[in-house]
Image 1: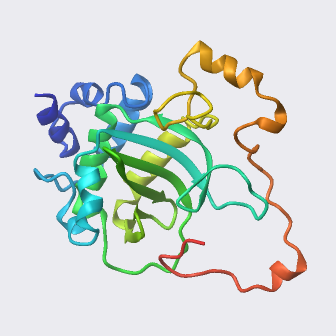
Image 2 (image 1 turned 135 degrees about the vertical axis):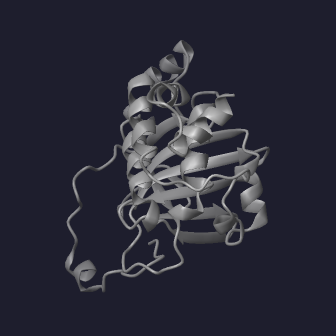
Length: 251
């Protein structure tokens, strides 16, 4: 019943009350209801598949399997790494923080508003460079598929092993903005799960004992470099290098 209601929500058929219920436990009741109502304003293609037909013909089947059967989905905030960056990285991008593990409703909302929605994608080539924002890691057993959300220059980039595929998501710009904005607000400091003696990959403190582990770490043993909010100054040699431009370019 909940699944049918969520599908109806995204096709503009559910009532406002049902929209709030369908979004429950995604980012917290207030944020959930706002995001769900905003996403519901965008036309969505709904079908029984887990990923859209558009995506299924463009990404490797093995990458799609991890998304279809994901047992866990973790969220990270990411960006291009400064030249002197020595912190944690994922798919060549610097990990700024963790935005936690997606709830069941969170996975469902993103799946049906974006991953399952062919109307959110385009075959055209945009004259823009990817702006890394959110990385979603879909885990199935020992394997995983990473999905990078870029905004602006709206796109999804799929990472699986050596396979990298970028899909233009400009038609789904409104959906992308709502998802990115919501998860950006959830960013917390990322800590290595190994340092916290835990197996889950979101890198967030979950117990008092983990708090003690972090408290005892000396500054030189800190698990992640403090993120540089100030843009580092470019030297003369860097200034002479041509800028990277064009669609589907990840530095």
